[in-house]
Image 1 (cartoon, helix red, strand yellow):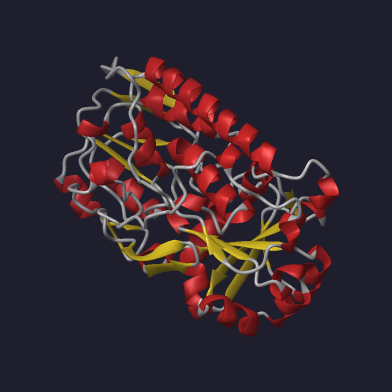
Image 2: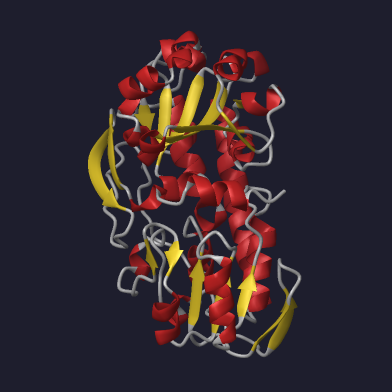
Length: 373
C-alpha cells in the first residue's frame, strides 16, 4: 500500500523546521533539517549493550518523556567498492521502462534521506552529486542542496549538476518537475515509497539494480538483515515475555502550526516499527489502517501506554504540555497520565533503510531504559 499522497501533503513543510531535542538523559542539540552537517546529541549509556541495560519488569509503569538519540549519522558502505555494470534497463515503480547508461553522477532524493543513505551504503557515495534536505549524514555534508521549503525540488539546480541518473520515490518534487527533468534527458528511476523493516530488502534491490550493482545490493541486504535481526533479538530480551505486560504504543503525527493530528496505523511503517520494538501497535489493534485524522474517541479506545512522535512535531505543539493542551483526550489515556511520550528525529524514526538497526536500538533504550546508564 502506497501512502505517498497523504504523507507528502502532511510533510510538505515538516523538515524545514528547526528541531530542538531536549530530553532527560540526552543532552540538547539544535538541528536544522536544511543543514547536512547536523549536530548529533551525545547519548549517555549508548555504549552499553541493550542486553546489559537495567530495565523494569513493568515498562508500562515508566513515567516521563524521553528522546531516542542517534549516536551517529554515519553511513557504513559495503565491504567492497562496486563498479556499476551498465547499461541496464529496469521497469520502475511507475511501470516505466528506464535505461540507465551511467552512474557517474547520481542524485537520490526522498522525504527521509533513505535513498541517499542506501546509495552511500552500496559504496557509491563518491558518485552522488547533490543532496536533499533530509540527507544529513556527514559523508554528504559538502554536497549542494537541491530542495527548498522542505521537499520542493528545484529543476534548474538539478539540471545544472548534469546528473546521469536520478533515483526517487516521488516524495520529493512534483510530477511537473520530474517531467521537466525527463524532458531534459535525465533517466529517472522511481522506486517504492514503502518503508518498513520488512521492505528494506526490496528497496535496496530496486536501487542497486537500477545503478548496476546488484551484488552490492545483495551484500548490503544480508548485512542489514543480520544486524537488524540481532537488535530485534536483543530487544526481545528487554520486552516482557507476557504480551499483556508489553507497552501499548500509538504513533501520532503532529503539526501544531496547521492543527494537523494523525494516527499512523497498519501499513504506515509505524506498525512494523512498534512490532520490532516488542510493543503492541494499538492503532492496528483497533482496526486503523494507513494514516487517519486523530479523534478523541479513537484515542481513548486505543488507550496507549506510550505515544511515539517525531521530535519536530512535538516541538511544533509546544512540547508535552502543549500536546496535552492541544489534544485534551490524551490526558484520559495512560500515556497522558504518565506523560509517556517518546520522540525521535523526523528523518530517522520512519526512514528505515541502512539506519534501521541503530534506530531500533535507540528507540528501545528510550522505551525500556530512558534513565540509563
